[in-house]
Length: 90
Image: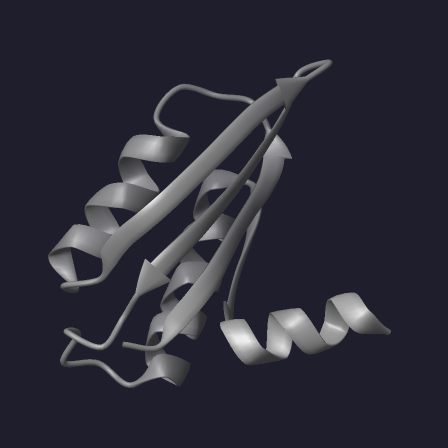
C-alpha cells in the first residue's frame, strides 16, 4: 500500500466533504484517516488515502481533484506520502 496525502482548503460551504469523498469512493480510493477544521469561515481538511485500488493513474486522480476543487472554489492537492514528507523536512 502506498499512502497519499490529500489537502483541501477554501471558504467553508455545504458539501465539501461529501463531494471530495464521493469522488474518492467513485474512483476506488480508500480514506485511511481524515482531519478537518473550520477557522474563521475557512475550511481545511487533510486526508491520508490509499489509491492503489483505483484504475486511474495517480496523475489523473490529481488533475481531476484539482478540477473538482476549482468547481467548488477550493484548492485540492493530491501528493504521494514520500513527497509530502520530504517537503515537510525542508
